[in-house]
Length: 585
Image (spheres, rainbow, N blue to C red):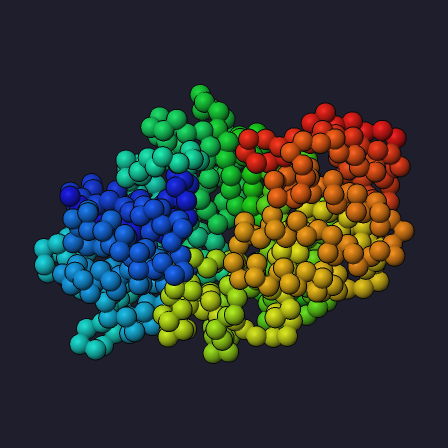
């Protein structure tokens, strides 16, 4: 039996999805003799298929899961994507079990503490800031039945009055935190063994769209190389882990420290691979080489916009002139790169947006590089939210940044308290309304990049790039409308790519139209094989061009006349495989 149960929003049954902060708090409580455990809002109650329309079943199952722990304190780690479900579950628990203490912590409730407490009386306390120094005295006072409401970081309602205590000081020395008790992590049957490592906190930059700086108050910290390597060793010894995610929004800020970390990783007596996040202006060739040599295989960069004007307006301030060249150099070393872009900023024009599309179109041509695009979302604690929050209206579609799990079932809550759920609200402009499918457009552009690059460079050479998107969206409107409402690339990609000929049909007058169709057919079978594209279970497939030119990354204009012959087979998994491919000129 436990005294405290932490409830965390987990998307998947993977070790990397465990919120590090919750693991640290639970470890601290255990060391102080306060039994605690963690349950997961998504998969602990087998809720993968329980979204809109099944809210009651979801809450009932989750309630039983929490009560099984025997805890008298239920502490929620809150995030914007699941805040609606956490609030609904907290309400159910309090109404059915009024003696339970309901505690909220984490970024969403921290940044929305005032509005949350003034509107939702079933939440007893919100813990703001870093809780490692306050969690033991506060939770112990609750267990003793004498809540100490002088604790730093607490926010609560008392006699109809909102009380917000000063925040606890930031923890400068993260090495002083205890090593995580990894027995708190459950060994789910489908767990993938990629582990998160807490390497530091905070970002010193001040981008207007990002809530990280508000939550961490731009206080950048990085653990010592010795401590990071110690945690890697512990995970390797306990779980056989060799693959890690270095959790930090801006890992490479301190070059000297990162170089030392890389040196110590290389001295390990077992090999590891790892992934991190960085800024393009906080990394150089020497650092990239050292990180790669120490096992880094993947890196994430937030570029956000291809417009120099917008870079300044959103306070990102990256220099864009060498971005593509530098990213190509990184990928050439065998490092996989993900770049993030945001579209639909309130101040953005079609010219700005076209510059972003131009840069993304260049980047998707780089082998090993992936482009992620997200509609600008107005997150609490950001300058964008503070500036536009009074102009937001309920969104008719879900921004792909936060998904839509349970949002329809919680529509009453989201509509009643717009200040708590700005991530589901829209700043309406005619341009933003037209951009709801842009992330899907770039998904398709990447998949069929030789074709789309050809069309962009020829048919749209003298036009803004956004016009190509407009034409694509118009050609696919019937298909796109229901897919956009699902709010996830994983749902729409196979269906969208199956309609590859819709946009192409607009260019029947092009001298290379028949070649474009052949290349599209080849890519559709080769890259996205499935049993629903009308291909027989086994056949000899012929294509009217040489696939060698496709795999060499050549431009469509440089494809040579030829023929590709291959044997297409349907496997037991329902996917097609191309076997014995041969190309002839």
